Length: 531
Image 1 (cartoon, rainbow, N blue to C red):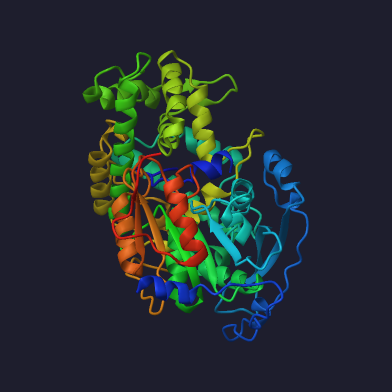
Image 2 (image 1 turned 120 degrees about the vertical axis):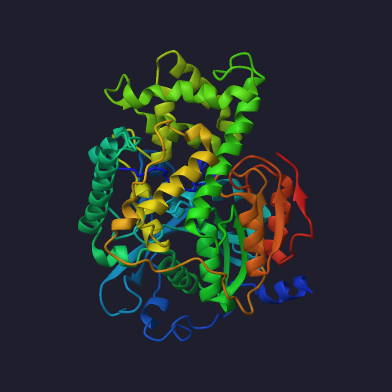
């Protein structure tokens, strides 16, 4: 049920997934929160009609009930973590009607006069769990200056993870079937079949999630929830770290509540003014660049499954994967490795350089007629659990994307987009020709709630934007544009990975830490070397 080309989720950072005059202006905005010092009454400062949400007291308790996997349950059992549910209106235009709850996790900083407040984190996606991210990330930050000065707080955005109601589109068996499905047929019959599947996906999302959730699941409303969270945490102003799609949450929040921002680190940026089609093509170029970097490294090794000629690695990869279109590879667990899963497994490994050895092994296995290793990489991307169930991330990605972006409803435009994507990312080209099939958003039952534009952020404390030169999912220039749009400082990280903050680069971490604590911006032209 995937119209080609597919837009790929901005996966959470490698660290999260694996461990899971300007100065004066910023410093003036960085008000500290010290235990025992009174803060303004959240309800009194609430937007009209939202007083009960802003004034609610979170009931902190154990986190195990918020865990989505056995691995999470083991980690969430740590008594250092506290969890709560925060009530929000499902529709902010009708706050007296149906409500939902946002799952929140915090790792508290030690009681100290040096404590600043809360550092709220979002890992991206859309659809990734901030609760899970905060648990994993706080473990590595606990003994750092950031961990000693801030409570580390994560939340599952509305519809995601442990938040309720949860977005539901495809059941596990339907998701498995979707992954097996061949959408490379560009003939009129193939296009009609793909579009029927995409229309059915939109219908299932509406039936199982409800139109009220679909209509209010976009970034506009996630940012509103985050301001309620700021108030319930007792922070006069928000300190925020957003990765990948989390930078869109951050820029949207900054536009809606510029006076409520203390500090923002935005890492792996999305350009808020970029057309979604242009964004998709740039992402394709980013993945091709990451593939080329992987292929050059691979070609220098005697066991490279793509050969030793870097000029022929794209062709060699196509020769390995294209046969799966007609003959998916049977796996020991009874499933099959489809062409689509081979692509997704590859893409998953291109997010972070530390996954490259896994991709080498997986492609060597594929050459030998074994697909389990590549399927494991694909399962990780889709967040498929060992029992065959899935996290809500893929469904949420679909829903938020359709809520946020203008729709492509013209088949000619869809065809041109697919052609441009094949040119931008030839290693993902099936060789069957570009398809004019429209994706599920073209058949979506609710209108989009935002559109690309330059944010208007008067009085905003300048953020720190971090952009990596070879980031495959969120290309470098998007960070340049976001820093310009928000009037922030730009930190360039040299490398080929997706996102960089608190991920083994002392240079990046030092600059981010100083900014978060005392508001020091990145120096003009600041650049950190490859890790």
